[in-house]
Image 1 (cartoon, one colour):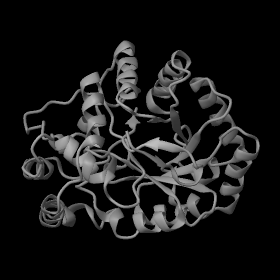
Image 2 (cartoon, rainbow, N blue to C red):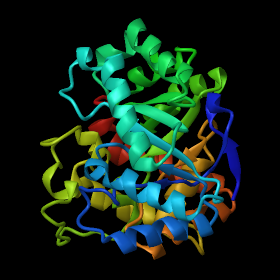
Image 3 (spheres, rainbow, N blue to C red):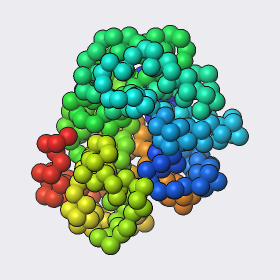
Image 4 (tube, rainbow, N blue to C red):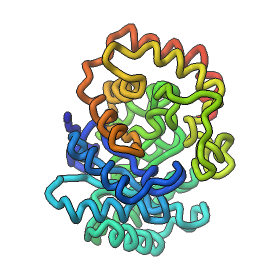
Length: 327
């Protein structure tokens, strides 16, 4: 699989990575054996980049990855985790003392001395302008607790603030055919600064797969059931903030754009990785088949201009008014 350098880390990662929120919580239950099989299927398909967080299943996702790394020490996996959601979302909780405590827990979960990359997990907006915060992150690097640090953001303005900081290696942001706003300023700014871009929620929580209908029932512990309006965390994390009914109708139109031999989900992933400035896209997978199909998107030929134009037209006509201004 094609490898791209992840911004200021200087390390190569696969253009299709694996998001592992699903293996921890909030997407229904995934058995341990199934989770490990997903990790293995992704690696065997060319994936070299796992994204996780210390709060996914209260550390379960990190622990599963740690077990896999122990079993496959030569797999060459780059692991990005996140921190910050284990405390109330107040700027003062983003302190060096808390960073060290959270970092110790993640290193233990993953079974490593130094984390490849730690990302602030969508912190309060005020955090992005705190010099003391970046000094604390620099200290983690100096102490060799982490090799590099980054941020996961909710808004484009937060992304731009992070990109302006010289120590930020990469920015993780919601980006998919139903969320085009990062194309305007974020991707060009990141490319100019040498900052990596990790595209999350690439399938709009599965909407872009074209598999859901109004009759689809999600498990009670699946965020697609309980967070459609931001009841538990930022609404943008669920269906990219698109109203479910609107998203279903737009997904039908998007599916019609898929070229022969590609599924709608693969088309969405291929669209993302061919946008200038994107380093890697991190779809999740609940089973081996999904992991393999997602990875295969990297082998598709570049989407032709009519498909690119169709994505833009669909977004402008059906999605833009609903989500563009909000994020």
